[in-house]
Image (tube, rainbow, N blue to C red; front, side):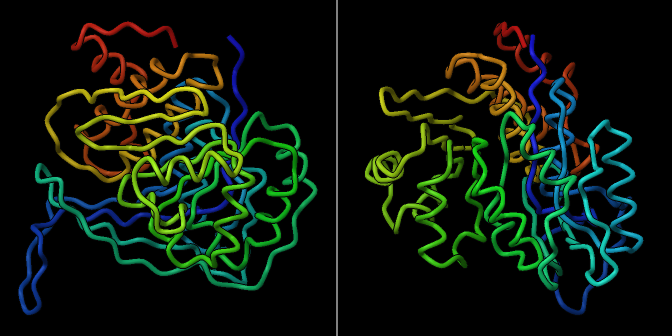
Length: 312
């Protein structure tokens, strides 16, 4: 089986993981049982995809600081290629405080980063993009001013782009949303975020609008209802796997990686959806981000428990 080469553009963060009781109230204190620092956001996608036997490449920038070097060290140890990540002394690594309540499925983010002057596109980044089977980009990346040259180069390349909408797409100019609809090979989103990329439209009307602009498919993540995949010729609903929810953080990133790897390996839409749902289900049984992304064995266990067999 061919090993897909997948490149993520931007959204490299360091997550400060803090298991707490939510909500955190002013004037109150509580002790954490543990804490950890992990790659987050695109880092979740990168680790999840790498563990599914794809070759993942990270492009973007981190600061020349403790958090940036720590995140890159972990990604590298997982087999992710980070040679195209710029370590910039003029910016700070985006840091996200992830407050989550174990076994409750509740979380809250506090973050800082994404600022800085535009960084020139390196020859290494150009080579990695041009050799990729596909690029993955999130709405957060389009809000990072320092990465705009890299984003523009990626948009101008011939490589297929898979775009995950995310809440930050709400802050984009309409022209950027239209450009992404026209350029993307696939749009990945949740039902709540769908209107952000579809000019306020919802449901099937939104999917039709997106597909008319050029993408080959729209993938909608529906949590405990599974996922819905729509193309120009078909629409399928793939049910979720029922598992105990311990932590929802990173599940969407894990789903994205698994679905994309499956499609690039040639799996049909239905099997790609099942594998992605299983990957998300495996993740929500684990606490944290980064290295808490599920292993292949853990994903296979979810499939086996439901009597589902997928060759991946």
